[in-house]
Length: 489
Ligand SMILES: Cc1cc2nc3c(=O)[nH]c(=O)nc-3n(C[C@H](O)[C@H](O)[C@H](O)COP(=O)(O)OP(=O)(O)OC[C@H]3O[C@@H](n4cnc5c(N)ncnc54)[C@H](O)[C@@H]3O)c2cc1C
Image (cartoon, rainbow, N blue to C red; front, side):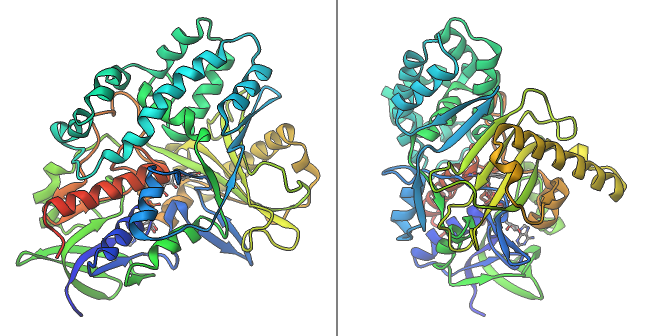
């Protein structure tokens, strides 16, 4: 076997994005994935002839200059998407708020749901900031976010934006909303908090305004559904990579005579560089002890945050009609006693989806946050019991919020806990969703993408920001680091 320039461990969004960028630039790349399919938290899996998105369902950021557009232009890959508007419908206290792309239409929805508040002027302020922040994200190119000076470089390269907005890195979104609204009642806070939870993984008290603005305006960007499931978007990228090895778990990485030896499946590969698409809490299991001892001082990052996902999947009879919105966030009046979450997210496949929607049925993925510790009981019976109670409670909340679901014919109901994510993605204790972009993690407590010369990290616990946009910016940025370090052969 020819020595590789790059061996990538893991076929999530991060692994395939950096793999496609490197392959497009003529690098000899091999990607090793432990499962029989790619995608991890953004995969699409099959069960009994039906297909479901495992986690991610929303696809955003293909407009000119945004992360997925940059990735698409640099790799030449186009994604099988259909645009959707509104991006999501929020259900709160018996009201619905459709998050239209057009800000004015969305403001009218807010005025209907929460009359008497200055939504228009608040969202004008938010929009002005967003127009500066979104395009600025892709200026992270070759930046080591683990080093303060390096992280500040792109910010100083645009002093006009930086000087005007640097307080937004340190100010909380809540303080901005309170001062902008004047009177800010708990139900409005709940609405904003749960919008932020989807993107920044935190509530307005702790999410810095910079990240809050991005989170609150993602529905005002172009939003899409991926036809055939999110796994199809991953496959579009992976086709550029010359060597994709499925069912090849990386078991060991050693350093010998200046090169790395990667043991994946039953084989061994020699490579100049290794890219780990693993969480920062999962490196012990692949790095050889000697290597780990040398590198441990560099493997810094926030402590394990312990947040996982509880998911429900099923097929449902298509009683909805072509105009029914695909994504819904249901904000609960009370915390779910089992999962401890106060909202959940439901996505329905597009009616014309050739893989997910079949024979008059559509595929549903429901997900909600949950602490991983809740699911770490010792007995399997106990977990199964909790899983069943949580599933029934979430479905009952769904039927109250969107009654159409109650009577619609449903197929097998499948639910998954953080234990399920641990089994299928190999993520430590089933933790998902990246490192929350909250104080005090942001801006300076994110790990470096550079573990040492020749070993790099990509994925949602590395670059600040999760989901496709965040992980892809991390991959584009890592590509810049590899270019600047002269690692490409
Ligand atoms: C429930 C849920 C809903 C979400 N919703 C959205 C959404 O709507 N939109 C959005 O943009 N984002 C969403 N996200 C976030 C998004 O899915 C993730 O941030 C992203 O997919 C993480 O990608 P990653 O590159 O970090 O890799 P991961 O998804 O963690 O994938 C890592 C891959 O590495 C493989 N692997 C692990 N160990 C090894 C090994 N030793 N050898 C070989 N392979 C290995 C795993 O099998 C896996 O395929 C959601 C996440 C969850 C959990």
